[in-house]
Length: 515
Image (cartoon, rainbow, N blue to C red; front, side, top):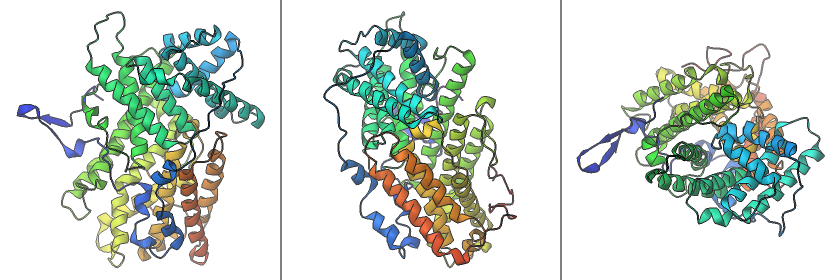
């Protein structure tokens, strides 16, 4: 992985031409979101699915009740050991996934909270946000914690966040590293609250400030914040792309368009342990690489203007290249982040989340084959092995993701909203395939009735875990999942799952990480 992407060619006059097979731009109006699947013609005979088209995810989130804020923020006075323990939770979670705060930054936070030196400033706002997210992490990571204790931690987190919000205007009028960090952490807290528009707004604002700061000269040799700002920018890039992928109507921004000229994260003193510091950096690099690949797939296969159709002469080569890049990503993961290529759980929850993300990317790459088959139900799939195999890979990937989906801290604390839509997409994909006469034959022997209840049990718990109002977008995603489940129940006479028969369509039996 190099520090600069090679996906642009510079022409005379300063014009830059992108090689579209290397573009990592996720344009507005792309056609790969969960909402776009509702327009599949195969769902025209299913009123429960059609009814969900009346109000978009964006409209639902735009129209929801604003977040209530308390007039005063009341939080406990903590001893230094308690503060260090809370900040350590932040270090193991948010600062592992998005390692943007150095050890020095975190020690300064600890002392500021301990000394109650919380005069209005970006530094004080940042310290309060770290404590708010630390409470979130402590309430989620320990699954054996009593519910009353978990709820108390969330309430404490809400108090820290309320205090931070009363200083957040200072970050909006400042153009400093601390201001960028405040905006990013605010976006992360809103992601836990499952408020996608607020998350996107703050993350986008943080990234815009990073672009400005990276364009400025760093004249102070005693403090070169370039690496710090670079890490904040890439964290914003990953987060923002996750939301634009499911809300394609969000305004187009320039953050993705300049990613090819921003250096990748390098050395940074973020953790006490060198091994943990390297693992955290590798995790961020892996997230960036996979997110760029996902954006590339969205752009090449689903862009409203230039997206390739399956009958295009260029489609097979582009599809194969994207699949090759995904397999290269998987094979080059460091051993500390590798995950099994079968149904066995990963040793590390961070690796488990990377596997879920890998499967989402794989399904995006192969779904055009299935879309083409559903749009041409009378066409004999057996006459085109490439299309038939592409459909099977797409379905295998969705089924594997749905059957082996499990809770990990990142999903609950950061990714519940996009994840719920991704799960709805996978369920709708399987439902659509069941409506195809030639694909139904392969699906009828699978235990499809287990999928809906499994996902429902996960999402219903996450929808209220933040002790705030439920996201209407997540509710809609759950309804779509349950609608697909009801469809499978209506076809129970056609289902014949066998315990002896492996629940996969491919000849690789337990592995789907091939092809």
